[in-house]
Length: 272
Image (tube, rainbow, N blue to C red):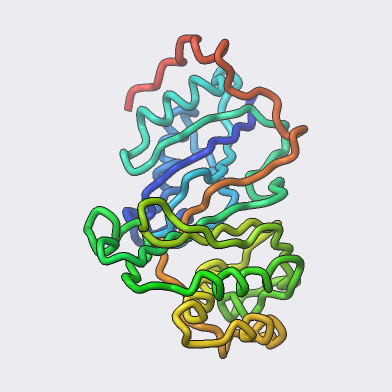
């Protein structure tokens, strides 16, 4: 018998072509499924709560998969962390209800976008993990821009053209800017029921243009009414974007990791 599991995954997106398998290049999905096949003894599919692009990072991406029932959540987490490449780390594993799917079962997803406004953002120890803008931004204008997109809107103006979608509406429950510690710049926090391809990066790119004084705050509302992205600013670079968390209904969970379970012995990992 197979059990359904959910892993909360962190990864450095700069080392991958994105989550999804591609014809060429190294993907997070490919690495994950390679390890799962070793644990299960047969090919196993891994499904993420969101498809991240090349360069985009994760601090809490939900990934669902199946394994034989002998695997417990703690044993699966230990085995995954022992076999995944160092650019990936599994924070936790939970056993889920049959039929659970990391993307289809999600209620909400949350992203963060980090921007470095100080000169030190150009450091090689920071540049791969934020937008090294190195220029001051008008925080008041940014916050006014973010307020415009809260609620339910058609976000076709902030998505890649050529997608086939039943609709372009998303319900944003959080959109705000905050100052990062030690004067390192700003972060944009956004949560919604769904996101379109490149949506967060296009929102950030447009708001940064507003924060630099290149366009007025009123452009945010005007762009939402356009129905195309011809006047939208270019998307922000991928390295500042993080998939932070995903929310699922409590009834989806069968068994979470606990202190009591954490002391058990792991299932032996099959030899290569």
